[in-house]
Image 1 (spheres, rainbow, N blue to C red):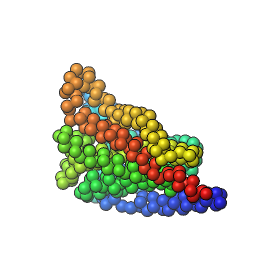
Image 2: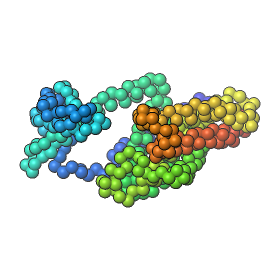
Image 3: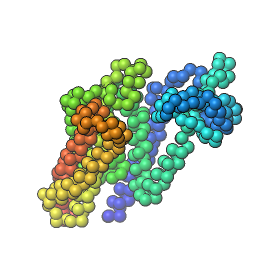
Image 4: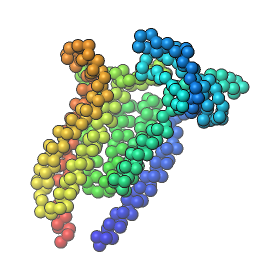
Length: 384
């Protein structure tokens, strides 16, 4: 009987994974609605740098200005194999400027005349896709080698998350739909699919889904309240003004900022929810005499230990991206009050503590839900 139930469960999971694969393929083929070519009579290609000419480069203090001329061999597209001269323009900012050397791979924007001949080659940046694929491949191999079938399911959920963001979240926000509503829909969709893929159709997955969804909704509400309370708007986000200049003047940048706060902490909330749920599931399975109250108490005890490290992890994750800003403030001798009241740091504090609040709440909620789902006494009655 147990063997039959195990086989049926495995068949259900295999069917679910196959259906999910089909859904991923369909999702990948789904157009975003923004595939139009912005640059007319142009094409992006991969090219190899054959030689460089730095005669037009010069430094003014620490800033590099001028241009770098490179002889390139095109490696992709209709003009593959052709050798052309490319131009690498300097804008005087380290975050954008780069200096190529012989043998580098570059991503180049070619411009054509009406006859289709190349008239200009602008060297945009280093070509990194092949290197990124190497890193992704190493991650996938290590994950599958360590986790087996669970690792494969994790990869599927990872792919689905990327597609959901690229195919649903971003296009719908650009089309003017309410960003917080779209964020909630996509975030909960990712929570449900990820937990079903990783934990299967089990009570521990259901408990984690319910608690993670409720706590994520609470964080969204708190994010809205405190964004207004802190007098912070969406222009604090990098590149936000570029969206307005690109013709999307009607976008709700503050709503996008609030949706970003919710999405940023929803993953950590989901992680903690399944951690506690899985731990209580094991306790319930291995201790048939445990009562509901004892199971909930065990969940609260586990939660106290885990929440401390999770909130610190969230703090480090958020503040890690702002370490250079903090160094600039300290190097200039900026008073701490000025730092804490600045718009950028206030926004990061909002990100951090709203997420931490969700983490604190998800622990007791998951424990209580598990206490009612993992009813040991009901299990004993059914086994008699």
